[in-house]
Amino acid sequence: MVQALTNNGCFQKYLWDRDRAQSPACVHCTAEVDDAEHTTFVCPFWNEARSELSQLLRRQPRLGDVTDLLCRPIPDELPANPIQRQKIQEAVTRMADSFSRMIESIMSCKEDLERRRQGAPAAAVAD
Image (cartoon, one colour):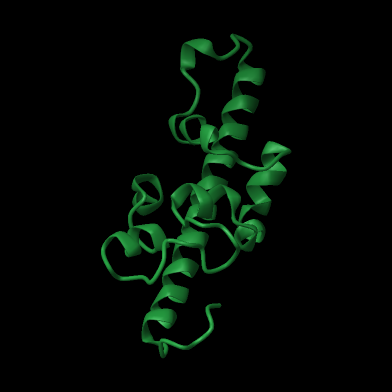
């Protein structure tokens, strides 16, 4: 999770800045820059990993959702009705858990693919 939130790790832009990749471009699509935002929210290669959260949100997740997903609602701003309050808290928990699973899935797969690329001959085609 930290890598995705800090833009560090197996992102081509991060690796390129450290002379560990030939280009900052995404190896999975035509984007010129692969960074945390691109990988997490834009790259079509990761659509399946985003599907559960997309269903819960009823739309594609966006960068602007991160704070709401991680910080949860302020208790004083929740409805006074205990049933409504509980439903909101349960929905938020499901979305936060889904976001965490999405990030974990994307980053672990991305790390595995990058390890394979690093170990592959220079002429090998990217996954």
